[in-house]
Image 1 (cartoon, one colour):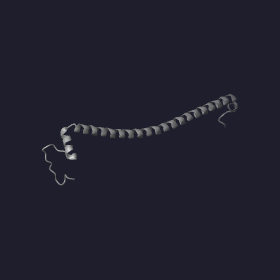
Image 2 (cartoon, one colour):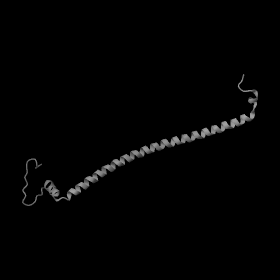
Image 3 (spheres, helix red, strand yellow):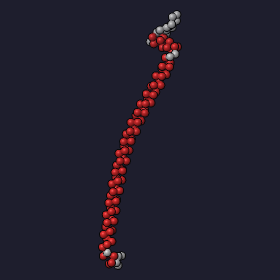
Length: 112
């Protein structure tokens, strides 16, 4: 009632090659498992490094934007300082310097 006949059970030639095949398959599966384990470890390690570098890049880009805005403001100020009328307004306002013959008009609010 067995599935196998008695002749198939006693055949020792096939069992040795079958065991070798199982052994090779086991070695292959272990090698592939080790490779995928190593690949997964490297993937997550590099993902963490990339995330850290991305954060540093974002900080440096924000700093670069601040510096660029400051540079543009300074260029604008320099262009305004090349205008004689603006320099005259600054001299009147900050240093109380007036052209000859001009009388300053002061109110209570401007004396502060």
